[in-house]
Image (cartoon, rainbow, N blue to C red; front, top):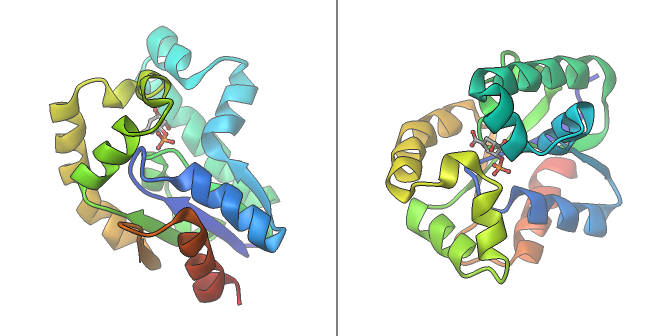
Length: 170
Ligand code: S3P
């Protein structure tokens, strides 16, 4: 049971939008690890970080990873930006990295009509310098763990989704 696609990448790179577009184009069922954690907890990620702290959230991610591995098949799994650190990520499915440089990601967030909400809901994107440092630390690790790397800069969501369907689902 591992015919899933696992979308990883930094906050704001567009994992959610790309997942929705893949669903639209292919009809695959999709789940999102942050959404699963929010529904398990009946509170938002921001609240979980505030009330319990990051280690608690990471433990929930590990729990979700185990559940996905044991129970989920033929599904597109979009993930939170730190989910790639769970053990046995590859057992869940083919790992696809959405890649862009930090400035492209930052621009994408601040130019969004809902920019304020997009920033507010992300506890680790409150300080741009810290987010950039986190990006620099993570990017090589994302690259290492990815089976497939998709450069999203300058591409439409539709094009990125097409590329993933072609490379991973055919
Ligand atoms: C996180 C990314 C968030 C969310 C949490 C932690 C991270 O998801 O899981 O705020 O560690 O990068 P997005 O990548 O969807 O913003």
